[in-house]
Length: 410
Image (cartoon, rainbow, N blue to C red):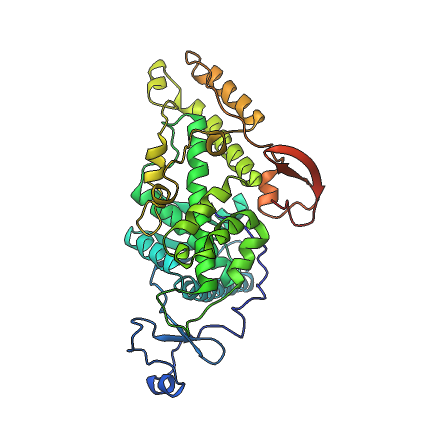
């Protein structure tokens, strides 16, 4: 699931100063500008972006886009005028969504990580649709449905925001296609939460990598390439700790390309107690709602909520551009420690209650403690609650509460 930022159009580099041209100028016009021709030393950097087409850009990756759902259906209970009005409104929304998606794809395709994810997602057979009914029901900007191989996006007029959302959900599509660490009913509840942390940390880390690449440019691209700061600024507004962890590695230029920044951002996720609280709650609710449907006869206990995974299982299956970056940059990572699998006391109580109800013959698991539960974490995450107290931690201990209009500063 993706985060949901403020969907107002960003006042960043994508506006009139850097809006990409969908119809590339003629070849002669490109040569007259003094920049390398499209068949020069930069391969597929053949398009121009910027107000005056002054920057080289790569063509957008082609994806399987299936439009906006639901499609229009006339309602016999309504007048023709009302049906026509609804039909036009839905057609206008569909055209708007397609336009913003075109711009988002243009942006995302300028990032090496973004291009790789879009290509892998499309090769795996994923389709992209807009469906506000599904995204709004969860308060999310985007969803990944691996069962139906769909990326589901919410409507927005901000292409920079949509590029980040699509990049995040593409990570999940690739994860599901290439590894076996998605939480399922075979995993214990505490393992499912640990895996949820890991796959989301990976998605936020690669999302951060995309924003950094858009800001600093592709090191293998031309000097005159199109760059933008807006996506990184959006990430900083909500996930400053994740971005900060990645940027600390950029004292060495190679860390933007070798996976070190991704590994650092991955670790930064685990300091964000709002995200941790949200995913703890989400997966405990999932397990508690699913268990009554699965445990119907004594033998079912052998098949559900029993399995764990090793640290190597997890680290080996999280990949950036095909490389298990945690194995390279954090080879000693321990997903059984408090930082990576520790839970709040409230969640531990829920897990113990789960065992008593559904696996009474098992010993209660010993779970390490980490963090303080943030009440209404989903509202914090999705920016809808201006009055909740933010929990401020230092060395994993509660220091103070602070109120703020835009969510906790973590």
